[in-house]
Amino acid sequence: MSTDDLTEISEIASRLLQQHGIDILTQVDPVSGGRNNRAFRVSGPDGSWFLKQYFQDRQGLRDRCGSEWEWSQFCWQRGVTWGPEPLARDEQCHATLFEFVDGRRLERDEVDDDHVRQAALFVAEINGHRNHPTAHQLTTAAEACFSLKDHVACVDRRIDRLHSLPETDAISTQLQNWLRSSLVPVWESIVEKLRTSVSPDKYDARLSQTEHCLSPSDFGFHNALLTSSGRIRFFDFEYAGWDDPAKLICDFFWQQDLPAPRESMHHLLEALSSPASRTELEDRVEKLFPVFGVKWCCLLLNEFVSNDRLRREFAQSTPISDSRKSLQFELAKQLLLIVRV
Image (cartoon, rainbow, N blue to C red; front, side):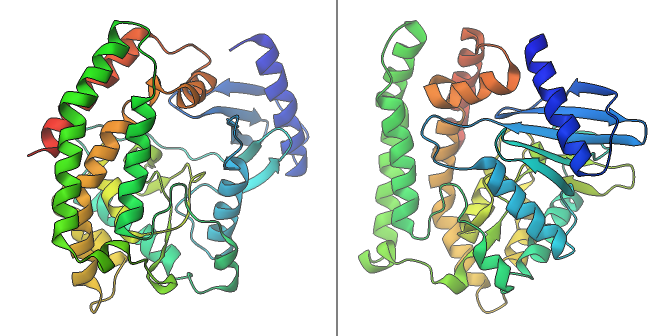
């Protein structure tokens, strides 16, 4: 990160700390690990805080800063404190100041049933306030889908976007060949199986408002810290909002950085359904699970897509290397082998 960038961040941090009643800033340190935004630990004589500066895409399709602020405010106002407390924001600079959560990242082989149980408690708590008047002021989640048809169309768009990429070098040509020979045939088989498993009316039917859930979105242990007390704290709610509970569950268990044990899925099923609706949600998750497997193959290839690549480069302050693309391509190929089983 350049000196000019750090100077700008220091100025933003000072303004936000002043909004929070803190007049002295002593240090700003970049926090590594983010893929979409820039993150910093800002310090003063009385403690530390977390500053997040959000990437704004060219299309301006989603106000990530505003979405996370509104979600975090709603949670804390309702006493749901699984995420960091939002303290101040600068709308013009797309930056937010949060409580600094002292914890560590989980290891890949460390995620267990208790961690999933805690995730489910968070989901259950926030949805306990779904009927609060201010809950309906929250936006829909990013790529929210409310019918089987919507979910299929969402993945279709991701595949089409990958198909549209130009073949400018050897790896982009390999990608196009793999899409045609491997991913698309698997996808077409999954869609055919889904469509023949339900009536046309059910395939098109949209969930009623009462069946929607409040979803943290991009939800998983890749966006979590384990505190010294053993409590999990979750973060990164820029895509949060109203969504299909089956989408929340499928995304949670397909997330690839720190996979959750699928035998613990019952915790989230219980958190997002009543005894009367449990069987219906289980059936919906079962039908959609392979659909989301293909979606995650596409997500692993975001480094190839220009706007997604720009987010990565903004967060990491460095260009995406060919070796990174190759790694993500290999991961997508390995994941598709699991999806097709």
